[in-house]
Image 1 (cartoon, one colour):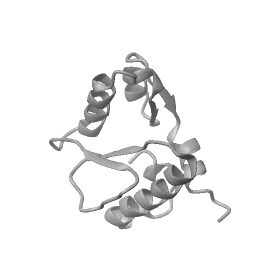
Image 2 (cartoon, helix red, strand yellow):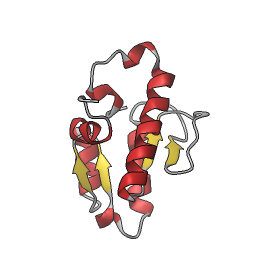
Image 3 (cartoon, one colour):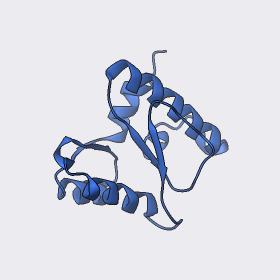
Image 4 (cartoon, helix red, strand yellow):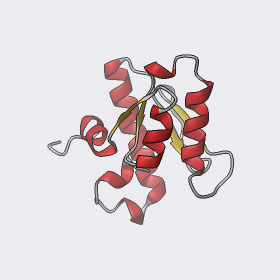
Length: 117
């Protein structure tokens, strides 16, 4: 939700639609850049993709998606190859401590969803 929330474009009026739009844009971006992408949502969704992985926190709660992101980074033998997109300082510190790098959400949103379209 850091990426979705990085631009005040009315996403809060249709959270599900904003999530679907993000997945569509991530699909396109990942296909063009041959990048592996995992998006982590707070709760399960019916949104699917054949290009990117869609994950969710195993249980709802404060920072639950953040905890799932940390778990995914911890579970990867090549954490130093992972870039986590977030504007949350605490999450950024946690994943950096595991070897991952961090890209600010607003900067990444500009890559996958340029304003000049």
